Image (cartoon, rainbow, N blue to C red; front, side):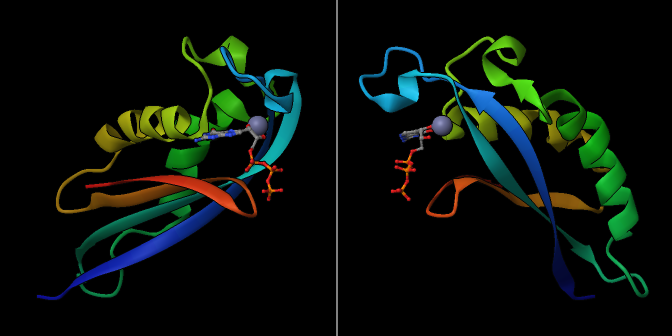
Length: 119
Ligand SMILES: Nc1nc2c(c(=O)[nH]1)N=C([C@H](O)[C@H](O)COP(=O)(O)OP(=O)(O)OP(=O)(O)O)CN2
Ligand SMILES: [Zn+2]
């Protein structure tokens, strides 16, 4: 059976400031983040997993924690886009049951900067 990947895209708004950083991003500022969640699995028979189910998982596990929040109050580390995407990967990984697996999550901080985790 073929393995197929599907991707669901989310946006959320958060504020943050970078710690131990020399530059304007050490001040509180905001981003409209874009989160791309890609899962893969066997096509059985018509879907990998319902996009609706991906949406509910990501909303409940990630977006509920970060949307319209000050990220420095949410996470106990410097909220760089790299640290944030690893944190999201750790939160989301257990939420998908075999045979569906996370393949990649990509977090855009703005239109020109992103970090991603791949499995
Ligand atoms: N490796 C990283 N570098 C920077 C991060 C980060 O998370 N990881 N974050 C920032 C700031 O949060 C900043 O808001 C975003 O930086 P940058 O992409 O440079 O933002 P610009 O608005 O200047 O983007 P341009 O499209 O280049 O104008 C800083 N660095
Ligand atoms: Zn920033």
